[in-house]
Length: 251
Image 1: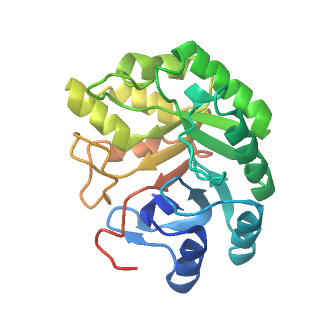
Image 2 (image 1 turned 180 degrees about the vertical axis):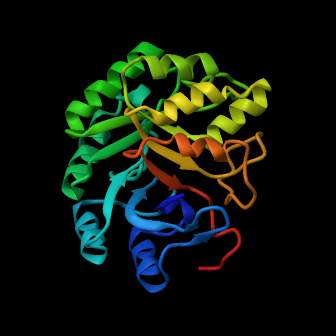
């Protein structure tokens, strides 16, 4: 199974340090996925520092064979912003700048968290994803979430994952989020997941491990229950590992 490198593997490093480490040692190696590929690299909020035009150019110069793409609310403004699709209207300046960086990178896709019910309804969030595609001029995927005590996250139930699948909007499936949902509900809707993974609108698949109680971003060292479902993944979908390697390795 060919998994790509996400900067979430090395949280807390700045973008320049990530590039330097990749040039020095290559991407991490994982027990289940082997050496992570650098064909695609996901730039994430867990990285430290500003991702501006100069940094985008520097990353492309350092790794010319890599296709970079933004994920979620990576820091593109001087002050970090928690901008999700639910807050598309409130954070339009952030999305405008993120779109500019995405285009400078030549990215063919962007994925964002669905966000909060305090900011939007499910239908409004989907509409924002469509408008975000127009702004980014590339396909945009909605990353579903999971149950929390407050119940405030959009796409946090099996019913809403099914509704996302039926919406016609592209999406990113985070299987660690799905594990939390399965743990919370005691249900594993494997038929739905297989369909979602295999559909052309499946833009990305994110893999990491947790015990079902939180999004811990652990490296997958033992086969999780969803591993065999990855064989259904659409050939155009990109699988990103988001397991945190800094917990076990000093960089």
